[in-house]
Length: 254
Image (tube, rainbow, N blue to C red):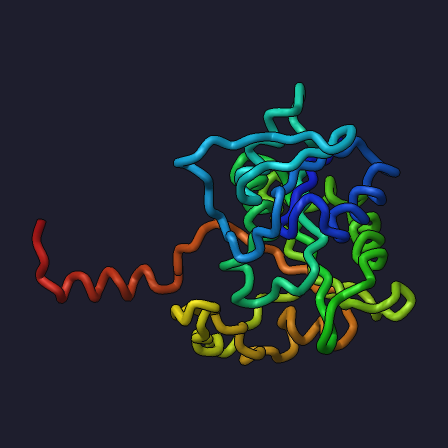
């Protein structure tokens, strides 16, 4: 299996390196990741500055750009198409509304846009503090890889995987979930630099609001690996008819 591996935490992040070590035991892996932390980059592309590819080791590269940039450049390194794109292991959850901002999910989604099945893998804290059980998340990926070809319409596959930050033996199983929702984020934090000028920090994300049974939040807190199928079509199909009726009452004309 030929795998293009990327992330948003950067080429030196422990998650991507642990996953690469696991994946090279079962396939041929090319790693292309940002040269710095690009968390929150979402699906952004670098369009106004040149991109540079830097080799760090055999089949390991960094790019001075976003996770989405990395997927585009990574595909250019293949003489033949890869079998899939994997993004991660992210140091922290990507659940609920997080997927709108996540560079981890964006790299996987770009792989899907370009025609390849894709996984986004994140290690989700079950309490406060930094995550550490990257081996658990790597083993989850190895368990799932042999089943990818059996996925219905695998060319359309984007699976968002969140793994509880616990030892492998403490996982309770695997669970298919939907995205939950968070409360609105905390307000912007205002501070001052050493010269007294205003600086601002984006506030932290809100706590889970919709975290009931069936959501990714609920599964992870219960000790299960959450697997959420995603798609790139943002159309709210259930609202098409109502929107058409609304437009008819607006009496607008081109």
